[in-house]
Image 1 (spheres, rainbow, N blue to C red):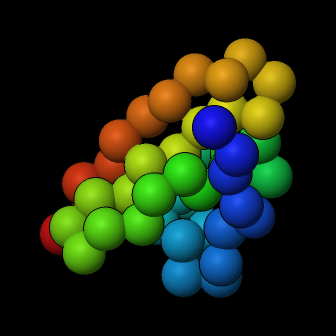
Image 2: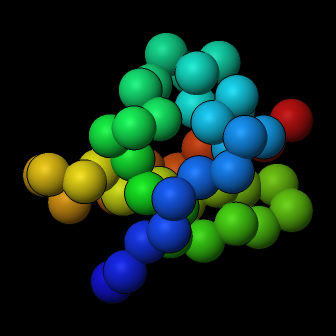
Amino acid sequence: MKGKKPTREQKNIMQGRRLNPSNWLVIKNLTNQLHIQHRETRKIRILNID
C-alpha cells in the first residue's frame, strides 16, 4: 500500500492525537476517518475525525 504526504489539515489532526506527522503517510482520507501508515514500521492506524 502506498501512502501520500499529509496535508496541513491532516497534520493538525495528527498533532492533536500526539503523533508526529513526519512519521506518517495518509492511506485513505474519508469524511469521518483518516487511515495512516507509519513510514518505518508500516503499522496502520485509523483516526476518527470529530
